[in-house]
Length: 228
Length: 384
Image (cartoon, rainbow over all chains, first blue to last red; front, top):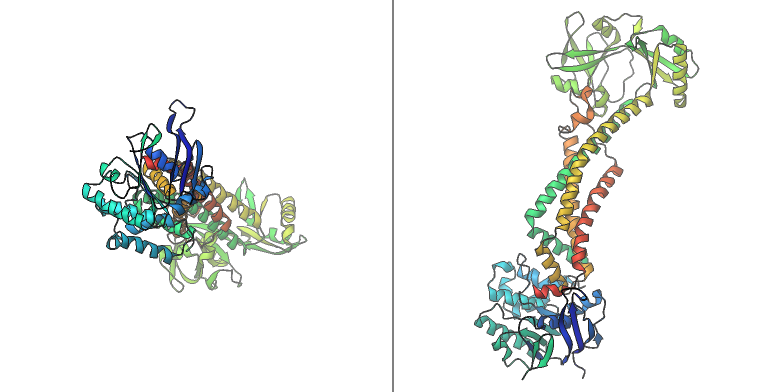
């Protein structure tokens, strides 16, 4: 069976041919099987976020190829990339990136607005993820009124609403205390059991060593290595 | 619900989150539209009033000029004019001005000796010596209606009481607002005018196309006269109101420019928060076109609601509150007193032009800067 994510000699250079040119990734080659949980570790500026951005189709590589399932996505035009993002990925950002003045429900529904889904279907999906993440009671509250842990769960709910195959999480525990970090990993474990593929970057040794993780990679200066 | 409508729903929710900013923009936008629409409504209503009243006016009015100013015209001129081919009835008219120093208003007094009712008159024309018919402005000034009495002081300083038998309707306000009709013989007594002379002659012309030719013939035959065609009067009104509204539009164009600067500043000065939001939406799977649609809905909601609100305010200002702010400038001093109400008359072409000139630029100012952000890779949001 072909890997779900296949990266071949992926490179990413920001501000190319300019004075502030940055080589964020150097010929990264790796693959992730469906249902696997893969963690990227490395210091700040090592290229973890750049690699997650490339895998998540948020930007295109400067060179190299990337396949998501059967699809070669590294040269897809923007509208197709957006569709791949919407249909294949769920993102959990380090800063959560929620719209704080909107309600929990509105935040969760955001990825579905451009999709041609019936309103009833949208609300049924929202109800399912809200229930799954124990947020049903809070759905009408504004995000700004929630605690940090609840906001984290809203971010996860938003990542799950489009029923993605792959969850991308960038430093998901960076702003959480140890209790909330454990709670998050329990949720991610459940998602893995449901067959989701999880790729995340972390500094946190607790996450890095967690039983949820199948394979570990370390990054340094844009180069990916399999960790010991 | 289609994706477009769902994005519209989100656009409205987004706007509600930025209440203060959007309220300020809508307030300025509404004021600008209200001012411009008021000028257009008022000008159009005045033109319409003039055209309405002139429908019943004589085809040609002949005045006599003496030493360059209007003077009484001999009644025998009417007989000479009536002999010209193409001329119908020639009616000598008697009229004059009256100033009420207590109310500080100017009226026009016109003599009638014809039983035929002019259009837009309620009641009937005065038939006996101490009766009169009034324009609406005079009735409002004195608070009188049909059946009441009107007190006037004649040229010999005698106080006279006139029974009101008729009132002109609002539709004729522009020309009849300050008008008092008296029987012709009574008016001659009132102003002490000689029976052999009239203020001017109203000439009926069988063929409208012949009016200017006949005017030339009259001028040729009676060189001390000044014939004025109906269309000439209408054209003069048009020119005067267009000129005044043009001046007003020029003055208020500065307001429009100020608004454009505000709109541009609002649009180009897209906040860090808005940039972040665009990044989030792109990152979670919105396409550039979805983001632009969102911004389009936001721009349309602000501009359309401001336009509609501004237009309604302008309509109320002009047609319900008597154009209190702009009226004096467009109407001019001669019809300032007594005040009169305008009949609603709207030129849809002007409304569409105003909509096009305000809504489209605003939407462009909203969408274009967002487009610059929406086309960038969403991975910047990963790094925030």
